[in-house]
Image (cartoon, rainbow, N blue to C red; front, side, top):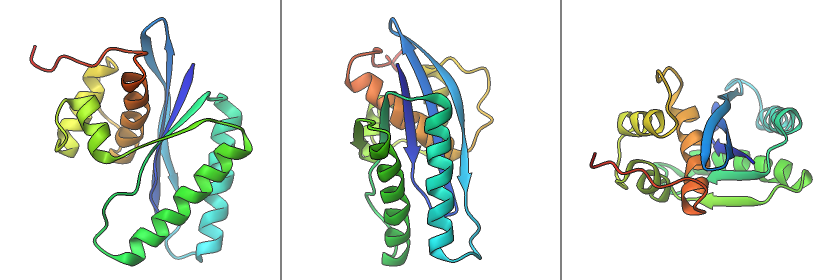
Length: 165
């Protein structure tokens, strides 16, 4: 099974793919979908749709796990991110992917053991959980991998990490 995790954003949307078989997970790919801030909204949405569908066609994920839009400093950024998220959901629906949404708090709690984990704590938690040798990937890709890992943990495909050891 392959889980596609998405951390929606406007200039940068993180994505991460995790393969899970027999309770073993590994990263398939991760990265960013970027749009140019100087382009009109319609063009940026088109780029998001094309890139999301390209990832889906390339990796054939079984599930989409996406971070829900929870809190924003201003209405304008919430609207723009909501539009990008809508495009991702549409692409997933066109490919008949089951969609699971998780709040940032749910993802942080499942992956790091603490619902208020910082970006650095999440990076380290994802690195440990997925047995990565280094953490040289963006915060958005980390958040996307966290969303995918959250699905696997909540649905008991992999065990929740024991962060006390």
